[in-house]
Length: 137
Image (cartoon, rainbow, N blue to C red; front, top):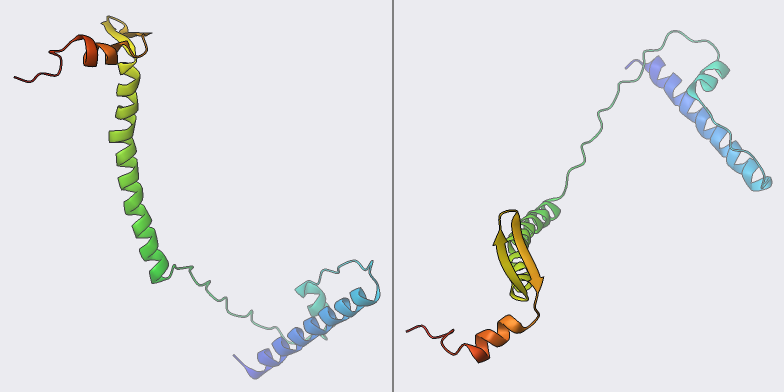
């Protein structure tokens, strides 16, 4: 970058800082002061016309990356989430469904399953009435 370009950029930044300081002091003095928007076009218009200045190079934005510890923690949560979903889907939901079936008289029909609530009768039948129900030999 040439020296002239550096000087003009420094001049513009100083003017911008001065303008901001004026606005801030105005706000402190007057509580109802309206915020003034400053654009680069206004600053350029205030300066005396200089030779054509090349635009400043555009800096690439830094990509946001997670730290190693946070990434490691997210991997842990991922593995725990898989385990939790598997437990819910393959253990807890079938357990609840079997409890619902145990309190109903379930009949398989052509259109699906027909259930009628009978309460504890299945358990009473299994443990008190039918003595051979739990015999394995």
